[in-house]
Amino acid sequence: MRRLGPQNWRKSYTLKRECFNQMSNGILVFIEHKGGVANRTSVEAIAAAQAFGSEVTAVVLGADVAGLAQEIAAYDVAKVIAATNPKLAEYTPDAYADGMEQIVKQVDPSFVFLTHTYQVRDFAPKLAARFGKSLISDCIRAKADGGKISFTRRIFLGKLDADVVSDGESPVFASFQTGAYRPDQAAKGGGATVENVAVEIGDVRMKPEAPFQEAKQAVDLTKAEVIVAVGRGIKSKDNLVLAERLAEVLGGDLAASRPICDAEWLPIDRQIGSSGQTVAPKLYVALGISGAIQHLVGMKNSGTIVAINKDPEAPIFDIADYGIVGDLFEAVPVLTEEIKKIKGI
Amino acid sequence: MKIIVMMKQVANKDAILRINKDATWIEEGDLSFEVSESDGYALEEALRVREKLGGEVIVCSMGPQRVKSVIKDALARGADRAIHVAGDNLTHLTPYAAASILVDAIRDEKPDLIMTGLQSDDYGYGQTGVIMAELLGLPHATIVIELDAAADKLRVKRELESGWYQWYEMPLPSLLTIQSGISQIRYATLKGIMAAKKKEIKEVTPSAELVGRPSHQRVEKIYLPQKMKQTQMLGNGDAKAGAAELAQKLHVEARVF
Image (tube, rainbow over all chains, first blue to last red):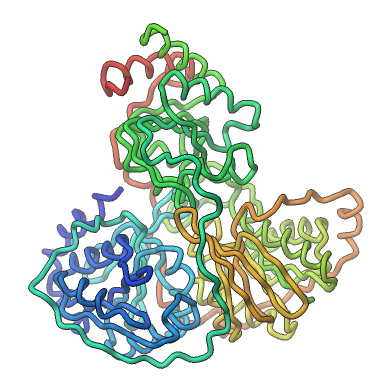
């Protein structure tokens, strides 16, 4: 999934270069940060923008983001804008929409690119609405085709892809799914200029408290070599024992998709996905997990992926190395026994 | 407190989706539908706020006549009345267009609180709620996983990434998008189902001007995702045989144990 975007894109890009040269005002890229430290995934939006061969301007918002702006200026971008106001010291959708609106109007870009993080989901639709439009959200790739640019996004919880084209005036707002591009694809440059812009921020109506982590995460699945994960298909808490036995013979850890943790069949620190842990074990076994995007982003970089699911159309099969279409209650006990035999335990 | 819950009807999660011949959408003819998952949680949370503070819960859904089943179910679970924004040409609106029409339909209600799911299970744009807030001039909070409502303000717990959370204090009126799993969804009781039959469903037709506005984006085609990997499918329908083969493959080919 992560490698698909830029490769396809570059191919069509070389053919359609003239189309991009018409984008005189280039691409504005939003950089998210936490206390002045850039969010790694934001840099992916720089990689996405660079693949278009158009002028890239990056923007960071905050009370004091001089250091971060300098850091971003090391990428191959034309300019970094540090948009500052004391009201931007902590993230709120009101303050960020105000700040970004002014920068978008000032730069007047053809495109505004963002990475589809929870923060972007919170403020970017509000920003786009101020320009009378929506955001083309959660894209997995973009390509130039016949003089127009089409963005691909997953629909129906990952079961289908949709190509979306923009017919309206610029700017086009688009956000890219985390992992659609790799941060290390973002090219470094000779040092871009940094422009400081003091932005005006109106009323901030919501009052945020400090972010926190629920309980100390008791389970660190990021270090696990083998993970056996269960989804809705496990049907009841009592059936978890099947997955536990398999995890045991493989020497792995038990994990789950969101619905299982929502139902409190397993604690939340065993949740894999965008709201849980992101893992990349040597072996990932997905039992009764259909593979919604939110789950896939948390495990798609695993070494070997096994999926057992009754639905042959389940998106999990798209990223699996081995798949069994069928009843997990039949397959898992056999799999566990066969592994025991091979291991001689 | 007057609460409006925006609920969308989508294809059933387990439905086998078939792409239509123009490759613009799915074949809907023989499809079963259900409420988008997180919208169901939004309704549950609204009912709980009403139980605590009193007031009224109004459910609002947009689409062809089939969305009445979502509305009736919400009324059976305890919503007081409903607004159906009816039309056969409202399925493929951009989030901005959908929000514009929905805002038009509910504006006169002057709700204290609007709640909806964080994103729909079909298009999954995750924007209609936020854009509605902007068009109504209301503050919003997204991906809310816990809600503490008082008569004059809200405290909401927002989910951030990687196991982080953050509480926000929100004034009223405002709009919240609700994360799935915020609470246990109640079932409709027989009494609720009977009572729902007497509840008001106001049908409104969006103005032709709003529906006909030129769109700034459109879906050109839909298709099955290109496969990222060569998946070896094992067992050919026999799960047990597949499992035995899988154990061998994991040992000999993938060498993961």
